[in-house]
Image (cartoon, rainbow, N blue to C red):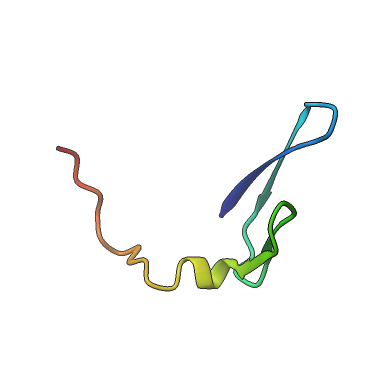
Length: 52
């Protein structure tokens, strides 16, 4: 899942979420696009987080 905060021109923020692996994240400020599946390609979600 990806949580997205977008600032509008009137300094207000819009919140949205996306949970589809086929979804594409596009940045308006720079020419950049990436699929969510590609963002998490090398992440191992099966390992447990250990606190220090």
